[in-house]
Length: 128
Image 1 (spheres, rainbow, N blue to C red):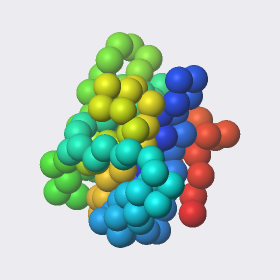
Image 2 (tube, rainbow, N blue to C red):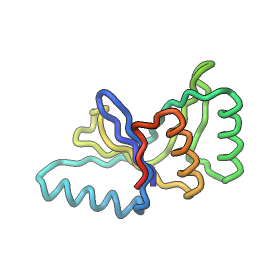
Image 3 (cartoon, rainbow, N blue to C red):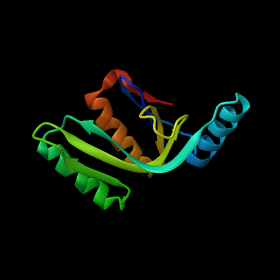
Image 4 (cartoon, rainbow, N blue to C red):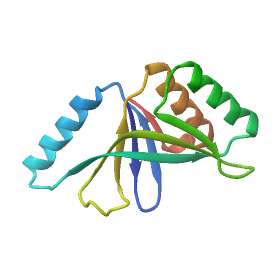
């Protein structure tokens, strides 16, 4: 499972061994037990990677051959690639830009995306 934590100042990327549905359920139970309101929506999220064109092409090729249709790779400009994911957005406010995005993909694809993120953002990547 991939977990992206969007804060006002940063994006943190985690690779978890948890099952997506179990993790979301536990998060909702925890929120309810603390009196917190938690919203869960099916959404798309994205993150940027500073990758050369050949890496973007390699990512598209890899994802295509893994049969993954819920991940997109698009060039933003000469220096950056946007990776788009489909999954669930969890936040305490429907209109908040801060929250947690989670998705579950084949293990090899998750590891591949996590490694790409680590290559560009070593301090904010965590593997559980």
